[in-house]
Image (cartoon, rainbow, N blue to C red; front, top):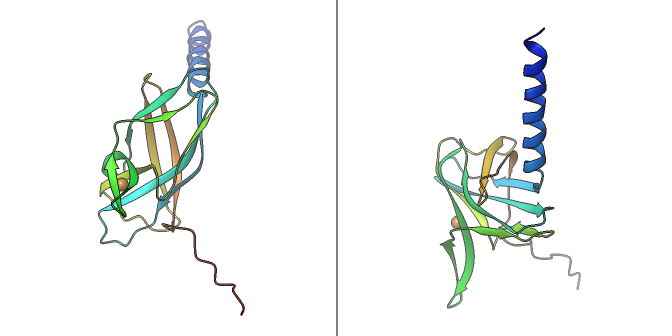
Length: 154
Ligand SMILES: [Cu+2]
């Protein structure tokens, strides 16, 4: 016990400081697009909130489900939707940033496993200040655009 108690105290302090640091950015509405087994890429979407006093940026991401994760954005170029890699995704202090179909997203490249609906994929985000945020995102069908309305009854 003489050894155990100080060790436990140190562990609790370490855990407490870790939690306090990790809490500035939280994530919700996570989803990874379900893709056919032949597909080598997919994309992840989410909403990030920054409760901290300072702006922060996602600078990298990783997942066991893909060899490479890149930060991407969509943009219209001459009427054509194109994807472009970006070096970072900012989350303003006290604000939020949405990664959504047709906009910013995490690109999963060279999938290491099929992404079937109902599975969960672990994703780790790295921020400019060295903090990380790890979470499990559900794999589900993700529509590229909102479904057209079919309820015109004329
Ligand atoms: Cu992309």
